[in-house]
Image (cartoon, rainbow, N blue to C red; front, side, top):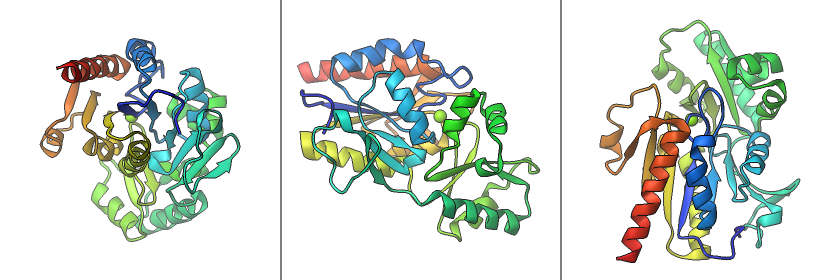
Length: 283
Ligand SMILES: [Mg+2]
């Protein structure tokens, strides 16, 4: 299935913004040592993001990553055709990617967000209500990248303009009544189906295990929408951000928390884990 002829022993699942990519500049230079080491050791790096397929596909090419990737908070799993030896079971071909759909269709989510807006009477603005320039202003992305960010399939990012603080409990209830989920990333709330990053990660891990036997997983993230992924990882890493997540360590006792933010923290944590794993395997 994978791009490698050598069976991997570790699979890395990583969030992008604020984790592998700097929250403000979207750069990844400081992560290059660990990225290069993973490539040398044939360790697949699975990008897992609330970003769209169009955005991640472009980014993975820039990063020279050929592993499958997970888009829109676990809504879709995509396998590059040119590096996928055996098509994943029940996948559909979509352009030059094999696709597993786990999320709900985007049109349904937009309709439901309308319902939530009416029910709560809040000034909610979703990506579908915004012009490309608005998305560009909010994200700091250039117009071309903002256009890719607007190509949604499984998840609607939104902001709430007139509530501070936001009554999260009420928001979650309104979504839950519709069988939907609210998550929070670094910049936006997100409305999606019951899919999340953790479920998508587990689905992909099952495939890796079926093909390659006993494999361990590393997961790295910085935001609440990453916690489902951290919970099911053998090596969960919370990449430090400006936010404080008291109590997460209780929920995930084996959690590592990086000393540094973004790609710098990502790099150090991953190098430490790979060293530790190598030493343990050599004992
Ligand atoms: Mg993030």
